[in-house]
Length: 326
Image: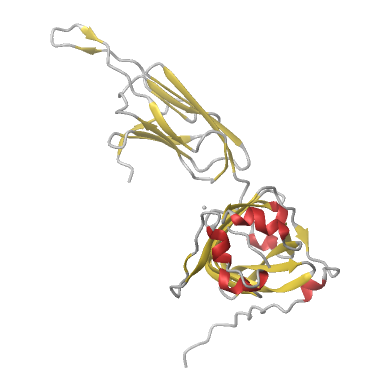
């Protein structure tokens, strides 16, 4: 097995009115007047400083709001926020100087969303793509996703980009199986044709379905120990693994056999990444961060699976009927 790893407001005004178009907030220019009755144009110099989701963002969650940060207070009138073909609620935070759009009830699945904000003669436009539709976790039963070493882009440690391609061919197999407390993610590795036992990474959090999160957990297999491992992923409408990431602390002491007589921590230090303390206090752990750089197809588990499928897995004990008090 190998690595992989790696996802208030103070509302001072609310638009739109019932007369506005879907997904828009609009105000009209209204002149103020001075004490002597002369018309005075309201000053308007606010500018956009930040936006979220960022331009051309992907995998935006169903209920993630649009947030527009400003460099000052927004005038009461004379601005618009329009979101194409999406109903929603707009709120303005006069303390944090932000405008917020919340879709109701959510963004359309697997779609491109475009929006436009006009204020003080300036226009800011944005667009992003959303996650696919909600999936039933039970649909993932009987499927697996094989992530090859070449599918991963390593953010840390830097040595991974140089050292890992020199290792024998390896891959990681992901599967979801039911447990007594919900669905669990299992990982199993193949290194140069040799199987490494499957490990139960832990219960899957489906709070942002079709995205998932698992961990933090300890994953131990062969000469590999990952501490505080977190795995995040997203499925598309075909149940292919569209995005995947992992983060973990890698205990380098268990990999000593890869470089006989050489400390992996000493090697990584040459790349500017010294080891940090492991949970026992010894400086022998490296931060590992990896993301998937291309989608991985969902494959069905068949009777003709390679020998690795025969590695003994810890079966999930069936959940028995509730016991009644005598």
